[in-house]
Amino acid sequence: MAVFVIGSYVVFASYFVCDFHMMRLSSSYTKIPDEKKFYVLSNLIKAAVLLSYTPLAALTLYRALVRDEWNTQRIRNLGVLYAIPDFVSLFLVSRMAFSTKLHHVCVVVFMVANLFNDYSDDGVGRALVVYAPRPAANSPVLEYLRCI
Image (cartoon, rainbow, N blue to C red; front, side, top):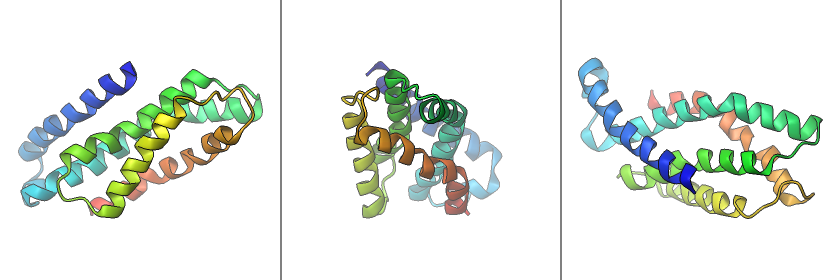
């Protein structure tokens, strides 16, 4: 739970820090309507955050699939870290498509379910560990495309 609270605060604060610096450094950012700026930032922040998690997630997935080492605590933490940008954007991005809101809510629900799953036991939870990183691997490219 501490990972979620601290991580949410860091991501929340990063919106305002990034907005401040982007306003000073990017002429194209200043031309974006105010109500859309946090949407752009949410995509950039999510891409950066997911990119930073990728090496640890890849190592965790490798150990799980190749060595059959299912580190439940690490998998739970990665699930929480994955959900944080979606959770924060629900509160900070004012004009978000309903389908995006629904996606973010589903991510948070799965994050909570993830906290109660023991990955050392064979089960459907393991399939989610294999499936869940796939969209995250494409995320930096998708987020870039959303911003242009």
